[in-house]
Length: 90
Image (cartoon, rainbow, N blue to C red; front, side, top):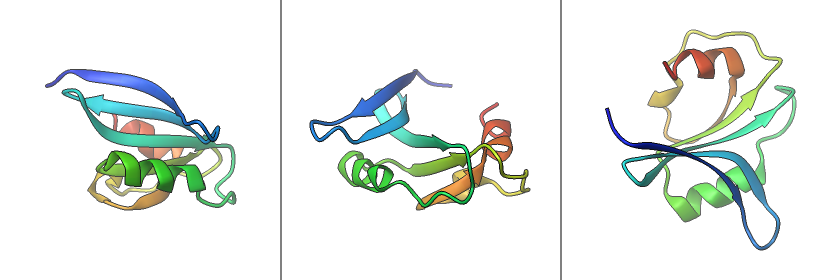
């Protein structure tokens, strides 16, 4: 349980991250959504991760196949399949 929030991030330099999820008022994880697994990890993810000190940093790829791995065990920026990521939010 907890108090959760959902936000969009953009800084003065117009860098963006699609989602920031907070838990109990603290940043918990950030997500950038891309259409392809072939796209490199977003530099904005790493910048915001350092600034916010979030636990989890995800670049979610729409075209990737499901993998059987708990992505919330990872404490580094990672590209993950959308099917895998979304299945672990419930």
